[in-house]
Length: 319
Image 1: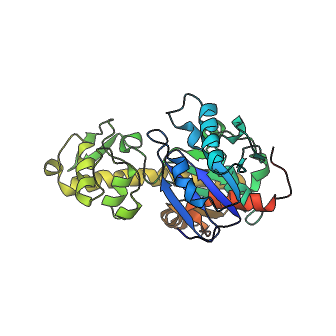
Image 2: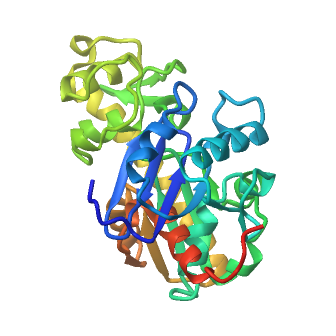
Image 3: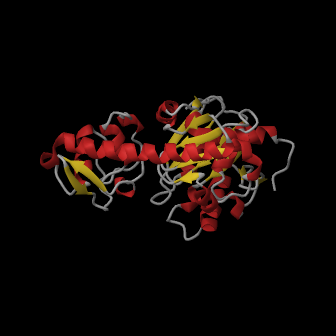
């Protein structure tokens, strides 16, 4: 971690990861709020920062009985370390206290930060858990959008590069010419599929494993075999790879189709690719003829975006 802390620290607190933009680097911390919540411990090393701007989506973690309970917890944890922190909401304003507008506003921070620079583009953030598809052309119309509304309008796809369970996207696979049903148990996730197919490296496998095991290729193959209630010696390495390939093809189909639909609605031909899956996303979309850009700090755009918004709005008081 670098010591030259940016005047405005940007923090994005998700349900699984906490990201910090310090002005010249992004730090990613695994922080599963449904199991443990080391927010204070993670943030204390940044205490030299005098100004802090925060966005969140972790309030949806099922350890909280409601979004408001999650918001209050996250705000309290941050304020215990940074008493003067401000929190960005889906109303496009900064707040000092817990309020429902703070729920899942991280996508809007990224949107607001880039809508003037790329007014006719669509911003797609392919993260570990979800994929945001944000039409920057209509950015002013998106203020106030909840995750429910975004799901309904196709602006939020609940699938990501790492944490999506295999059984949520595919129900069958062809193994040695035989149509084979997929078990709906949580035996394996997207990270297993991508590691098996060499589209991510073990260091990017930052989420929990279904069996609590390691991130080796052999372990991923074993977990993938479980998806069809088998051991690796029953279906072979090729069988595990076929399941992984089928899953990734379906993931690609859903995301690319979603992006094409939103681009058609807004007549956009440019896509801003963000998230830890930005490079893969760019390859998928370039194949379909889109002009793709990967901005700086693409893997933590909301943390970067909220820092920019706070800097640009330093004269505007938080509510």
